[in-house]
Amino acid sequence: MAVGWSRDGDVQEQIDASVADAVKLARSRLPEGESRTHCEMCEEPIPEARRQAIPGVRLCVDCQAGLEKRQAAPALFNRRGSKDSQLK
Image 1 (cartoon, helix red, strand yellow):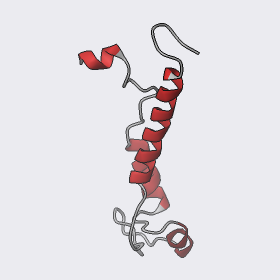
Image 2 (cartoon, one colour; image 1 turned 135 degrees about the vertical axis):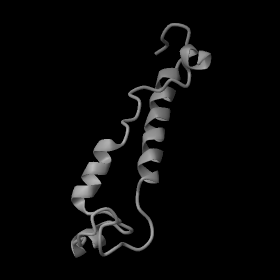
Image 3 (cartoon, helix red, strand yellow; image 1 turned 180 degrees about the horizontal axis):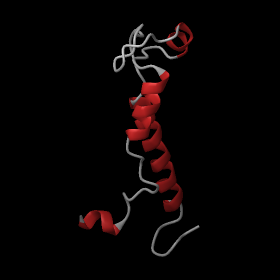
Image 4 (cartoon, helix red, strand yellow; image 1 turned 60 degrees about the vertical axis):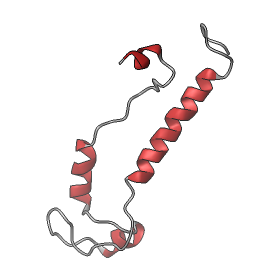
């Protein structure tokens, strides 16, 4: 389905790029290495079940939830092909 001046498939390419960017961002936020026994932020013990479920975990559930609330939300659309993004 072509839209305006774009070629067939351009819209799907933008959707695919947006999804790929979101997956890349999510994977970059995953912890790596050995899990800690105590939270880096509040020093509360991290439950064994959490340490086994998430290898490399560094924060307790409460601190992790707070961190995720503060992180910026990704853009809702991909501006790679937009003329506006080339002007800025």
